Amino acid sequence: MTKRFGNKMRYIGEKEISLSGSLLVAHPALIEPNFNKAVVLISLHTSGDGAMGVVINRPLGKSLGEHKKDFAFSSLSDIPLYEGGPVNKEQMILIAWKMDRECKDFKIYFGINPEKAEAMRQDEPNLVLRGFLGHAGWDKGQIEGEVKQNAWIVSPIDGGIILKDDGKMLWQNILVRSNPELRFLADAPEDPSVN
Image 1 (cartoon, helix red, strand yellow):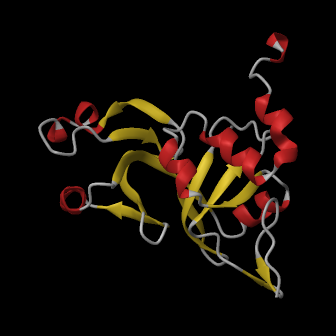
Image 2 (cartoon, rainbow, N blue to C red; image 1 turned 120 degrees about the vertical axis):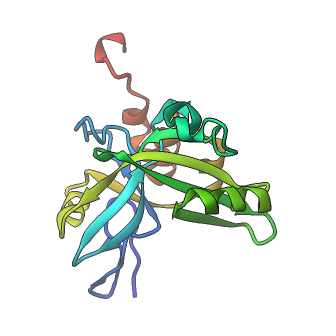
């Protein structure tokens, strides 16, 4: 029984394990605009159906109340919005996460409705809520192929890093933690002429 992380899919024997609940961290060489320096939280992955998740490190600089007037006077109006991915950008997905201090467990609630989000916020003071416009999706076998080609680094979720970072440095922090050998590429400027 083996588990391999980093640039490889996870396997036990010959059976592939789902990437659900993992982070996909874009390799520095992945320059495709939709995923350049992206960190994707994978919410659903099966080898037969493909994968779905949201990019969690692209803040839009506005809140839910600013984006949708229906929420302007709601208790959810201050929720920050992020670009969740290139698919269906009109759709909003609410996600909540929190660190359970007692058992040091990081919990994620994916795709909650606004009523549930309001109730959770009242009941759980340490809850962090984020809104994501759009999502990322892969067809059957597509994400497996991209991981094998080293376009993505598979990383377990580190709640401590996610809670500390609003998105701007998240890619670099997780990339370097997952693969220290990539620090040089992670630190490289966008424009090589300013190096």
